[in-house]
Length: 306
Image 1 (cartoon, rainbow, N blue to C red):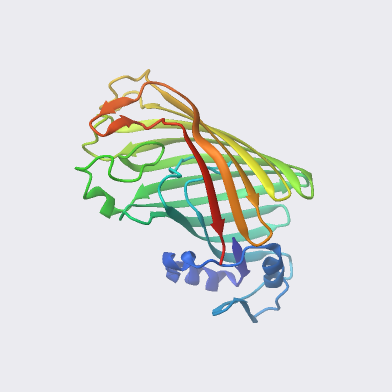
Image 2: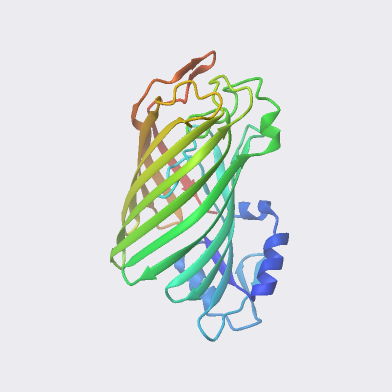
């Protein structure tokens, strides 16, 4: 992700006017360009890629406001991802965000994401606000997030299973979650990441599972060293107690995803792993197959920034 620095009032105005489709541009995301932005003088404009220019500002007291956009492959579970998107469906993730560095150890952030698929009008729009505190080698962040399908996805729900799924659910409608993330830096080029999330998933009306709401918990563990990183993500879902349609409050589904990513020198990225490497619980039998889908899905995925 690439960030640029600007004055607070101007940044807020730009963020409101910035179309989400602008995030689809494959902007450079390495430290060289980040350093170029932060070294700019007040009220100057720096060209960060051909045809893309942004105003810069940085306070004398160290406070920094940064605006960024980026694009990444969809489907590969990240160490801090509370939701799982299928790696089989071709698509991408577009991101826009703003970060305000209040002090050298405290920063606040807000962002929006769009998960899209190449051959379907189905999109999942997400938002998140939170803050991160850093103390030397250690950092801890808390955030609130929400995700929802676009209105177009509700039209063809009479064809269950024809749409891409989230957490193995073709009838995913929306979710809210509270996230906690921590990191321990082992040295300048390696570290350990831990994550936890609790939230609630709402399913589309008329789904074949006969359930309105699911509670979800997720735990993640990640480790990285240089260009290599790996993550292990476990999730548990079960019908919410006391919610209409919760035909079996004690029923639950569990799964574990595992993945390894290698960032290549030419701004490429190679990922290998498996979704539902381990799973438990009995899925609901529907005319289009079990739901949630707990099939083990190995993958090899390559992404290239242009």
